[in-house]
Image (cartoon, rainbow, N blue to C red):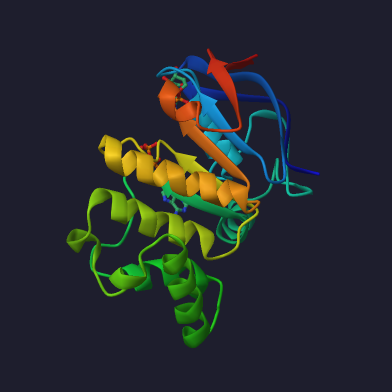
Length: 222
Ligand code: ADP
Ligand code: ADP
């Protein structure tokens, strides 16, 4: 069964009188439990595709079905709800709140979902334990290494038990040891059945996935 079913998705940006076709008919099917890398050079359409997969933006045309629901033309309020409940995001810049402890950062998506404080705490500790940071619960992002911060972000992505983990250049700000750490963590998550989509321009990173698709000029290549 498919988590992602994208059919002939096109995305056009209008900048003044000029139109830029960022995606020119992308069809992509990702099954539950797959670990797929989307690779491609700068300007090929990766960010645009990631925004659509992550329900941060909608296609100009085509169809997108996520976890069995058609999300092609939903209004923003509904998309925000789907982002929060269905997708765990991991970004290049970590996007952690600097004033909050690791534990509180991981609790945040659960707070938005209305989970009680004690249950939030329990699940955040569980997620941080899973990423190897049980001994860093009270540390703020600034007190952690880059690799540790990214692992906190992975814990935050996991804590809602999402259908999909969507990682956008997750190793882009990490040195090679920390990158290896985070990629090993994705391997573990894949091994226990998580669905992961990893967007990257780094060939070596894409190679770590179970399958990689190449995007070039807004189209997927074999
Ligand atoms: P990548 O992430 O692979 O670098 P993008 O999806 O950011 O590729 O960009 C694909 C194409 O769409 C590029 O030609 C880019 O200039 C254009 N583009 C991206 N975002 C916008 C935007 N908001 N407005 C206009 N053009 C855009
Ligand atoms: P960029 O691709 O420009 O480096 P990011 O990858 O950090 O930017 O983020 C991509 C987009 O996702 C941005 O428009 C950002 O505002 C948005 N975003 C970042 N974090 C979240 C989140 N947790 N939920 C929803 N949208 C987010």
